Length: 220
Ligand SMILES: [Zn+2]
Image (cartoon, rainbow, N blue to C red; front, side, top):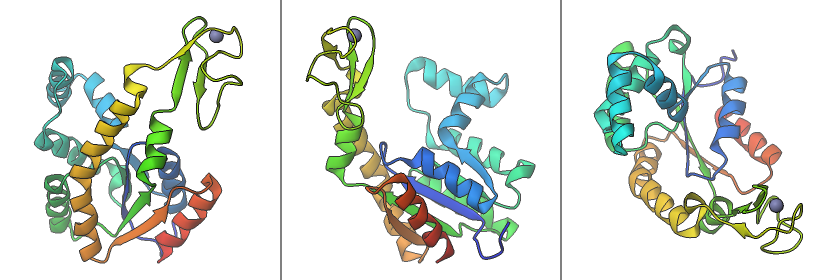
């Protein structure tokens, strides 16, 4: 691991910003563990532990997992040996309460959040990416209006069947997901900016260009 790089890095980015791809790139570049809250939720939920049963109970009810439970899960993960020298946090913190809990947990160990990267993509582009998925009613083939459009609008290339959108992929759902994300997360961007830790990377470019900008931001 290179000394010039910080150790505890947070990657912020809205749904659809391409965070997953970039998180793998950054954790590899830094040589630190990739802690994805989404992956961790899945693993914990399936584990036969007290925390696992607690998390599962919220999922089964279709309820949001409260902040204190999310915080507990992440802080337990950060105590694992592979996170002792640092990690890349992806999907956490998402609220001010989570950010403050993270700072409070690192401080007694003389550690801190070193760097926060905000992968910025315009709202119109995020909506395009999130709401572009269409499926064939007949054969199930998948299309995307941006990355894999059908030859003829509304019709399947393979069988000519009609294309439809699942409720999760509609513009309405995309709008409300983004609304929740920005309401919760914009205060975090201010919080880390005021501490001089925030670098913004333009996520509207090609994957290679984003990776290059990421590497630059990590060195700054
Ligand atoms: Zn089809």
